[in-house]
Length: 342
Ligand code: KG4
Ligand code: ZN
Image (cartoon, rainbow, N blue to C red):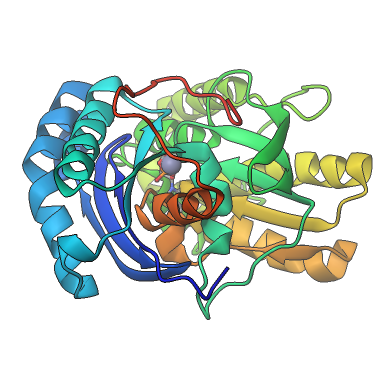
């Protein structure tokens, strides 16, 4: 498979990052991400503003990805793009751009499921990460999703469990908002948590059977906790921010690890991978690294660059589909909801 000479241009525009990447076979040549700062002041992604920013960013981002890869458009073998899931207005920008460029260049178009890409990002050949063998368990943890997936093959995946309400990234972001931190709050909670005591405060874990998750109760208990403590001491947050963040992060990671342990027990699979924006979190990375020794697992943690939304992960799926001859018709339109394997 690696003897081929395939160049894929990949485009990702599902949420608030405009990204383009060029891959040569399964290796990344460039991976350019323009993160939209505009949402910070609103405390969350504003869909209409995201679409407009994608529209402004897409041409310069693609140009930079090609220039950094030192590739001319005429050398491209195919264009891969995120068809969904995501925000419709955002997806439309990337989809329309990819369709037009593929048609203009007379090359194939390849649709990619964003969640599949978070999982298959492990197959980008890179010295700083290793590839799992099949079957493996993948936990996708992002701002929009929380799933445990049994991956039998590149395109044969089974969802074993998922969130019944908020995604884990939302749990981080909403908790951060309650503490007065800007969006996206996940990385800020992580930074404060590094300086705090994870056992300073105790938050209840949700009681959800099986492999499904729930995070909305946690958010509510944090809200009540903050209200109670700030009523007694108006400076409570400022004085305890590190300990509060460490305790929130500790609770969330325990919830994730409990479900992963159950999935490993139920399936007998000991190869465990994570993917999605929250896999950039230092606490989950450590918990997974420790699991190698603790539970005899072989764990796979993506390189930082491939954790949060990026087009290189879209490109690797594009390459795998190209090798299978799986192309997409020009009549394609985006899907805001797009189940794995559909
Ligand atoms: O995968 P992603 O970039 O976009 C979605 O598809 O949702 O994930 C974004 C999410 C946000 O909720 C962000 O707060 C979270 O990933 N995130 C983190 C960290 N870095 C990003 N959460 C906790 N700790 C981090 N270090
Ligand atoms: Zn994502």
